[in-house]
Amino acid sequence: MNSLSFPEDFLWGVATSGHQIEGNNTASDWWAWEPGKIEGGLTSGRACDSWNRYEEDYATMQSMGLNAYRMGIEWARVEPRPSMWDDEAFARYEAMMESLSEKGIAICLTLYHWVLPKWVADQGGWENPATCDAFLRFTEEVVTRLGKYPLLWCTLNEPNVYTMFSYVTGEFPPEKRSLKAARTVTRHLLTAHSGAYSIITDSLGGSDKHKGPLIGIAHNMTDFVPASPGRLDRAISQYQARAWNSSYIKALATGVMPRPFGNGKPIPDLAGSFNYIGLNYYSRRTVVFRLNGISNGFSKEVYPEGTRFNDFGWAICPEGIYNCLLELGVLKVPVYITENGTADAKDTIRPRYIIEHLREVRRAIGSGVDVRGYFHWTFQDNFEWRAGYTQKFGLFGLGPADPELERTPRRSAEMYARIARANGITEDIIKEYLRE
Ligand code: FCB
Image 1 (cartoon, rainbow, N blue to C red):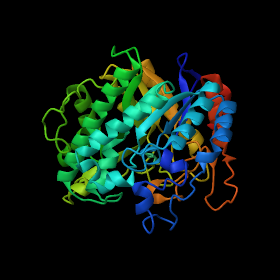
Image 2 (cartoon, rainbow, N blue to C red):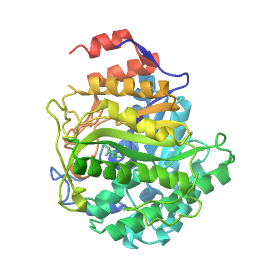
Image 3 (cartoon, rainbow, N blue to C red):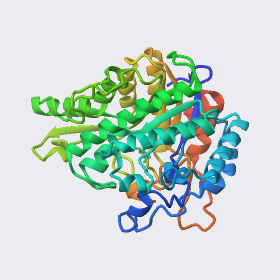
Image 4 (tube, helix red, strand yellow):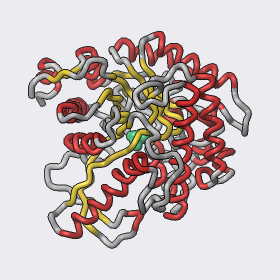
């Protein structure tokens, strides 16, 4: 592999979410739900204490040569009770964004990354249409107070993952297992997204697709392939790819969310309510058909020999990101990789993972997809939802038991900094990190 350069002004960043790093998000539904549910017995607790230690973390990002950062704003912090806006919390977010801006680090701001204020969850969460209105009031408040900072607005993080875990498999709060509820929630999430799109464009100007604020969602896509050429295996893999990947792309483009997560009826103002799309890509699923119910996707994962897996058991497949980018290319808007990374406590697979995925991103750019940035998941080990602190996705290691919460750079951090500074992957980087 030769050196690879990326387009001018390409964004090199890291991605995080509020609840996973800030600590003490006490007015949230997750905070109330976590005790007894989290692997390893801990709760999110003080997480990475990023609520207080942001300045040192941003300085590190700056010294690495990063020019972008994906962060979340926690609705529960700024509106802990209905219509009670917490000025101090807003001031803290403003200080964070001011600090990033001073450092020349562009901001991608996520408005909803799976965590609700507890009072919203108590009124039925996303099953209740009133949550759409509440979310729009929250969006309006954020835009009014912080609107000048973000370059990119990410209204929703991975609505497919959220709906699957919270309403189909029941692993995340509110632990429901109902396709009917999942459909309602999907509809409300997409309604909230399109409403937020209007609010942001109306307040910050430019409804022209290529001017004004960039607004989109972060869409989780998986590369689905059948484990055999058999008819049923091919059918189930195509079905999953449609349900998981394509249906959201179709919904954003046409305003109609197909089954199984939609009801085929138009969602008002959804069509075209984006001017970029975010891709969160981690892995491939190789599946065979099984009659084992919808929460198992009527399938079982079967991987060919030689498949590489991360600590979480996710199959590593760099060309999958190429396939997903090509599929997103049909939307004809700029694409940002809003997440890509791997759980690897020992950092033995991460350097290669990053290089190989970036090579595929570069290939997609060569094939005509307008990819404008890459946000690595994640900056430092953090609260990995139900898996707690057991999965290590960080460029920097961090242990919840360490009283100092010291951030320890992994080899990947140094490598990623070199990539960002070079705006690409040089021969030296390849020689040094890909030789094993
Ligand atoms: C994504 C989530 C992110 C993190 C990574 C590992 O699905 O958006 O918060 O948990 O997975």
